[in-house]
Image 1 (cartoon, rainbow, N blue to C red):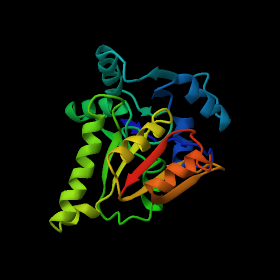
Image 2 (image 1 turned 60 degrees about the vertical axis):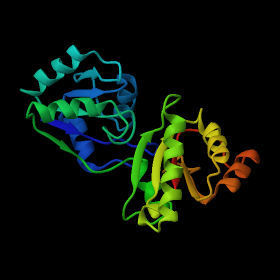
Image 3 (image 1 turned 90 degrees about the vertical axis):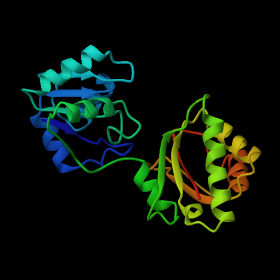
Image 4 (image 1 turned 120 degrees about the vertical axis):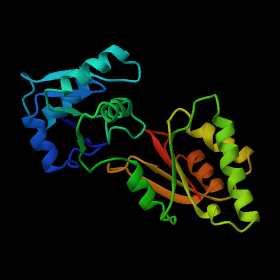
Length: 233
């Protein structure tokens, strides 16, 4: 069985009792960075000397992933991401897909990610919403942003309810200011929600218009640190 288990995104107290139990009971782990995960186990004072760790990143060779599948046929293994929930913009989705195709049992623990707190805290009507993961760095990036705005403009023009469905995505700290510039150039005129450092001491969740977000960045009241969850409404 594959156990898909979320880990804290920032705050070490954001861990479930069930996850801590499985930390101790299971002996085989698949994770993005074995060093990071060992540090996490140490933080909870869990001995990992007799445990086995395998790495799974976006660059993991296919033969290794198939080897993990073979291991899963006879063993209980847990899959963790660097932080948050595996599969959400995470290389773990490749392994889950193969488990489906090969009828290998798996279960996921509900708990931590950055998306859901950001969606709830945005203040938008989120009875429906769209999640795009990380925007592309270059190719298709402008096309996606233009499509979002075109979708909203046409929905508003024809009185369709789609205008009120928010769109959420992750954005890297290295491209956040570029995103604001791109939205400004595309005449984005709707609400925008920015969430950063969720569950940390300096957590910020701001829902306002684009111009105010740009001013907050210029005055350094919105620091460009860590990853962002962006909502467009």
